[in-house]
Structure formats: C-alpha cells, structure tokens
Image 1 (cartoon, one colour):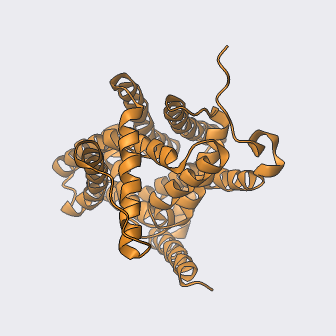
Image 2: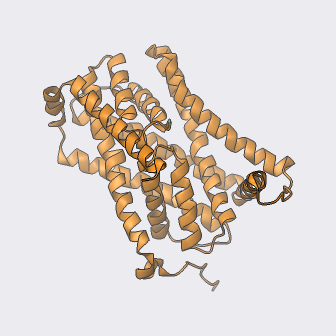
Length: 335
C-alpha cells in the first residue's frame, strides 16, 4: 500500500474522529433533539439552493471556455466539474487536487490543450476568489470588532490572501516580465523550469480570455454565489428554531469556511464543524446548537455534493460508453 494512500486514510480517520469527539462533547441526546427539528420542506429548499450554486459555478466555467476558441455545453461542464470536485472533497489538498482533475478531464473530453484548460481554470479562480477575499475580509473585521473574535480567525484569511496574491503575481509576471524559459535538460531543474514556463503561458492566456465587461458580469455571479452560502446557514438555523442574526451567521459562516480551506483534513471534515460550533458559542449560543447547525449545513453543502460528485465520477469514467461524452465536443459550425 502506497504511503500517500495511507496518509489519506489517516487524515480521513482524523477528520471523522474530530467529528465524533465534537458530537460526544456536545452531548448525543441534546444534539439529536436539535436535529429532530429538521423539516423536509426546508431541506428540499436547501438542496435546491445548493444545486443552484453548483450550476452557477458550472455556468462560469462554460462561459469562460466558450470565450476561447473552444465549445462545451452546460451539462457536460457540470459533469466534468463535479467529477473533479470529488477529488477535491476527499483529499486534504484544499482546491489543488480538484483543479488538476478538472484540467485533466477538460483536456480529454474537449479539444482543449492543457495550456488552454489551465488558463480557463486560472481565470475562473480570479473571478471566484477575488470577490470572496473582499467579502471575508469585511466580515472577519466586523466579527473581530463586534464579537471579539480571537486573532487566530485571521489564519484562514491569511491563507486565502496568499493564494490570491500568488495568482496575481503569476499574472503580472507572465504579462509584463515573463519570457520563455530555456530548456535545461531532463533533470529536476529542467522539469521545474518547464513547469514554470507552462504556468507562464497558461497565466498569460488566462489574462487575455475575458474583457472588462466579462469580468464585471462574472464577478457579479461570484458575489451571488458567496452570498448564498450564509443564507443557507441562516435557513438551517431558522429551521432548527434558532433566532440568529444574519450578520452573526455571515461572520460565522465565512470564518468556518476559511478554516476548512486549510489542508488539514479531507474536505475540512471536523475543522468546519468545530469552528462553527465554537463561534456560535462565542456569539451567545450553546456549543450544541452551533454543532447542530454545522452538521445540517454540511449535509447540504458537503455530503450531498459529495454524492453527486461520486455519481458524476462514475458517469465520466464510462465516457467511452456514453454518447454524450464519447466524442470530444467541437464548436458548432457558423450558419
């Protein structure tokens, strides 16, 4: 058995153990009593909102891809993204593993080259993460001032900032100072330089795909996607009978999500739930109430999408047997 596989299993065990520990700490009986307040109507609404979110993200990718010389429909984009998200959700590599899987699937299910698909991925990261950075910065500061949140809450924000700054630096370097790197053989240095040159080309291409009007349009969609997240958590709290203010919910949601981005456990299992329960407690609610909200939220935003991603992965893996995925999609001829 490979060491990397053993590590993944160990991290899964760690995440589940944290979750079980939180459940025991909160009290089985009290937690079950809180969870019995769930209703089919509210759960259905939450699942619809979650599906809407994933479709909006797929639309962004489709929009960007179609701005290049390639073509893909929304259904196929959705399948590819969900299959890639499966890798993202079951590994502790934050977003990196999932993005690599999406690039690979785009390459093998469309006429896109790796450089083009990587450029599309980078462009989508820009229009997704930049609005999120400003939103989370705003609400983290509010939480720090209004609720006296500890300074450790800025760790996740710092991690997100590093990602955004890295993407920005890569774009600036490729567009204004980057030059083709010379080949230096097949050694480690040669492979590293080759990888850097690939990123340079992909980043340069990504900066040319969208116009300012496109950026504004896609930024608006990204903002709507991120705003939907605390709304879903607020609906969960309302369903369970907790009167939590929308500002407090928003602060707690974004801080919990930022914590789950840290590559500690697969999909942030345990870290998201623990953070949300703790900050519910800080804002005046019990740890048990916070954990109940976190568990239902994760059912909707993690376990339900994980099931869809798993099914999409199976669907994609049988691509050669399915007409819609059998052939690479080509841009329809102009009429």
